[in-house]
Length: 588
Image 1: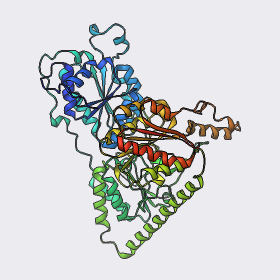
Image 2: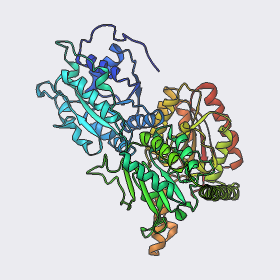
Image 3: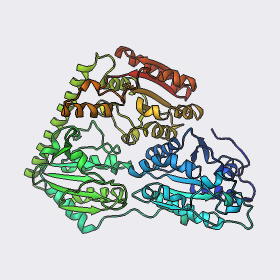
């Protein structure tokens, strides 16, 4: 909640005032943090000089602070800032920074540091919390880091950090702000960076000849399938990709990394055998071509390709740009017939126009073949949706509640509202049963345990004040990492409906232990050891109520899920404050 203050009516007097002025020029709407003495000067300036204009979001843990910025950027397309307390705060937030890097998300991480001048350090504490080069702790998974040593260098460093984070492919940056510089009186004025220093460079366009060749191969194919990854970070992709698919009669297998394509579009072939039948596969801004196109036998780690022998592979995206020399955040490559390095936000409209030109004069026989293939894809789409519906119906009466019944009941409760789904999909059932009809409905899938609640808070922050109902299908294991995150939603009045996908287990790993047990002939019934979140079972509803949430549960009767979720949704929409329904679910 914004608190008005001095509002920067006078000239900056302290180093931290100049820093706050630059942060204001960057246009960061929020700064998430867990308080720390290494940025006490900056904290005071943000509150009193800048009047909390860049609203401060207090978090119970640094990883939550970074996760909020991660989710906010995914939902809004714009960055927010994070402030981390010297070395220890940076190390606490490092996992969140790493996940932001993996997810290509712009996060502006600011850190307190030092003081670098040894004579100004408090005994012990400033020494053990300082480092010779603080950015070394995260250098392998940030796009850039800096530790300016003079107050006059700070504005340019912050401006560069903003440009680097926002240049595609995007990612986190880290800038350490020396405590001594923060707390020194200004000897002379320090100018905030002008608009040109904060201007993000233009997007990377495709080589015209290479793009033309890619378009020709796509239009020549008889059974094309498009696989989009990060292309949906640009909301225009949602419409443009539908136009392209309809134009060339291509199926679209959405990876879910971002929401790229309407899931009820008849050419959506996610979950079908269309990939196996394709003679051409176009990847749009996909880092890992293997995951959507390979089958895995998890017990033996045996991988087989889903692609038909001889299928033409096309790649349009950032290729090896941003490749880490440390994290193996890249797959084994596929042989490609055409590879175009470009930002899909620029290249996709150009590809659409090139394909329109190429097929404009096609004979009726070729057009009829396209229609026939599109009809076949539509039949695949319809059959897959019917199969999912039948599977969900077969599981509907189970207690504890099946993942499909959970997704169906929540959909029934929220579908009449303007809703947004955060990161979790209830084991994929939300993407099968819900109607994702607009690009803002979902910022993309979760990245793993201990990421979802923080990202969900950021998504809710991005939609605060819009009247939208933000829905988080929240795994229990993830929330166990950061239960204090619930306080953030209550204090900052985030419009969150949390429905627990609570199987009382770290079941992903439990399942791995079952596979190993079967392979080795060890007792499968002992796979639960070290995996259950039970005996005692956490009472998530009681936990939420302790933070002043509306909460119900635990719910084990599938017929009681819908009414509880509707009551919670009504509370969120009426009050603008969060609500939680704890639903106990099947392991599988």
